[in-house]
Image (cartoon, rainbow, N blue to C red; front, side, top):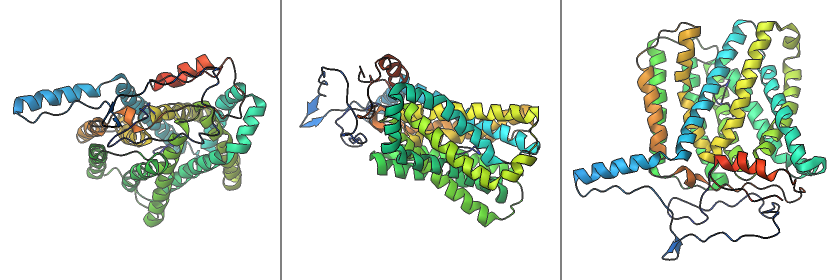
Length: 421
């Protein structure tokens, strides 16, 4: 997930036309649609010509220059819905979290703590401790055990790809140049778009692809700025490092799309809790095998422990907000939002490392944000996929969970969750 760290949802209507497509829920047979004794039929969407009418953006009027300007303003104002603003804010929150992880990792390396697999172990263990007990509270031990047996293998794949993506990207920074890592890290965006199409079959409008290109163009300005100011280092083995970076970015893109597929259909605490459980096991085994000597020799000082706590807190926030952003917008939008993290890195560098900012940093940030706006110029966040949060049908409903679950999970995506009572 955490594409720079070294690190790196939405209700939709059931009927879709043109760029919008129906996305079936995962294992609809194995998921309980509601535990209410009486099902309330959903209101049918308006229909024209045998096809549902889906509300879209105000059209542009090309009849005259004045009409075009007015229609352009109406289109622009239509972007700023509550859901879009939340998506934009959540994207900058995760971008800021990634910057915090980069800063703390840099400080840890400066203090001689260079065991990245062990460093991320604390993240997965924290996710396990926070979300797994709540999942057991909701499902009961028997229901949680059934979930492990029936669906656990899916989460093993998710956690393994996330752990190995982090590992490969950390290794890439040790071999290739910083500029090469920044450029190749953007490979996660097309990979995420591709796997999102494989899992959920969204229809992308050309303006969304334009938004991607604009945001990547902002990244290009950042890379140019770093190249001009010689903020780079010598590559130990550039080919090897670049291959590590491409492999890690591919796993990041796959993990983001795969997790979005889950969180659109399952409770957040189930998905993140399972990632924490299996991530702890996989990461722990890998750390014990690869870093057992470094763990004994590492400087476990008070400053190092404090930095580890800060790193883990930032990553915990990231792994909590990211699934909500998947529901609000999409995993592809999440990856685009991460491109602005280098600007936040500049702000940290000004105060902590006394960097001298180059003027290209500021327009690059504006270009990245412009790409995020253009991404939803035609399509709405609600049109990115269907959100149908359901518990497994084999889990006995928890009577005290409906109100809390509905408030925390449905509130972020603007739709109600069926009562579990």
